Structures are given as C-alpha cells and as structure tokens.
Image 1 (tube, rainbow, N blue to C red):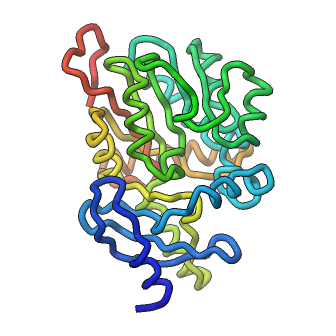
Image 2 (tube, one colour; image 1 turned 45 degrees about the vertical axis):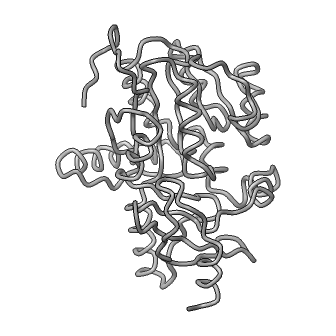
Image 3 (tube, rainbow, N blue to C red; image 1 turned 90 degrees about the horizontal axis):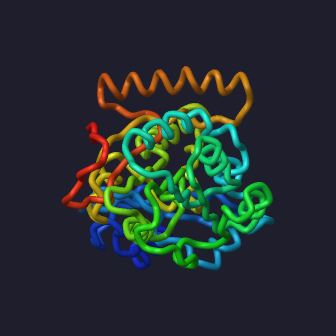
Length: 305
C-alpha cells in the first residue's frame, strides 16, 4: 500500500449518502501546489467523493477573494454570466410548469445571474452566497435580494419558498445531506427543488481522454468538487432527504462564454439531450427536479415524469 493510499485509508470519513465506511481508492490528484487529494468510491452506494474532505480552514482560503478566480473553476463559472445562461430559459419554463407560486431561493447564487433572470421573468427571487467576493458583486446589483453567508447562517422561515435552485453547488458542499434537508424545510408543501451538478460519467471520460492525448489525466477538481455525482447517487440523495424525483435532463456543455461559443453550446445541448432521450446515456451535466414529498398534492399542476 502506498503512503498516500495508507493515509487515505486512515482518514476516510463515513459516506454522506449511506453512512458506509468502506471505500475503494480510485486515484490521487494535485490540483493545487502542495495539496494532494484522494478520490474514492463508496463500496455500498457508489457515491464518489474526496477523502478525506478538506477542512474548513482550507475551504475558507480557497473561496477567499485572493483565491476564488485563480484556484477554483467555480470562480470562472459564477462570474461569467453566459456559461449557464443557455439553460436558464429551459429551467424557468420547467419551474413555471411544475410549481404554484413565485417565491424562489437560489442557493450559492454566485454573482446573482440566475436571480436577475428570475426577477426579470416575474419571480419573487432571493439568493444566498457564501463567497464574500461573489456576494458583493451580486449585492451591488440586487441589494436586499442577496444574503452573504452559508445557508445555516441565515434565518429563513420554514416553508417560505415555492422553489429552491442549486446551480452547480451540491458538488462543493462538505455535507450535501444537510443542504438538501435544510432545503426541504424551507420549501412549502409541494415546493420544487432544482439541482444542477457535473456528471461524473462525463468528468471521468474527459479525464481519460486527456490522459490519452497528453499522458496526464485531466483533473476532477477534487479540492473543490468534493463529490462527483451520477444520476443514480443524486436520485438517492433526493429520496434520502424526502424529495420525490420528478425528471432529469442534460445540461449544456461547459465552455467559456462568447457569442460564437454560445451558439456551439446550443448545438452541443441539442446533441447531448437527443442522446439522453434516445438511449438514456447522459454525457452532459445533470439537471434534476424534485418535489417536497407530501401526501396531499391537490391544487398543484400535473407532474409529468
């Protein structure tokens, strides 16, 4: 057993999805100088995670204003308003068709791009963002619509939102079960949850293709993407925290922004969506909708599956 593997075995934490302590070590990577992280798969439920998780001190430094742009892919994602905007219209249409009411909370709102889009579409929207750097940008444009801090630090009333969105957030949080459980309490009966996460199948394929091309495996960003989700494990998290699965869709390919690239992304979105609908193979990011699972859904729109 190598030294890094032995360290992993001694420090691995319980699986956040199923509570197992049995993991298979997949590989190590060094996405930042002087920091090496192990990536492992739970032998019971299949959840892929960084083991052990980075401590709070590391994560605070990682998302600080000095590090946010340089050391995180989310810094690029959150500060570029065009990267996910290709999917905004689709998600908004789905939200409208699936939920009554318009009060929405965007958790991990970054620079507030989706909050702005929903406000323009007539929603009563708010955002919360733990990065002070990003939240200042959002707050400058949206003022009292943006809360700076972590979800547990803001006292929202229970059952006060009709919809909650998590755009590429759940892969970053150390305890996704807590975030989803908290979201459940904040939603009204029949309220809708939307989640967007990178797709582990695509991320690992891209890692292998990079190794074939350059001899060096591509990064999975294990220092900030603490979990690598598949459709199966994400659905399991929904069930665990009380949500009813509604539907899954493919996200647009990740690219930096620009008018021509956004056109390319639309074609890419069409390609991966067609592949998913015809074969069930999802090579794009995962877009998933769930509903607060209550016994009485009278008065709610029809829920397509």
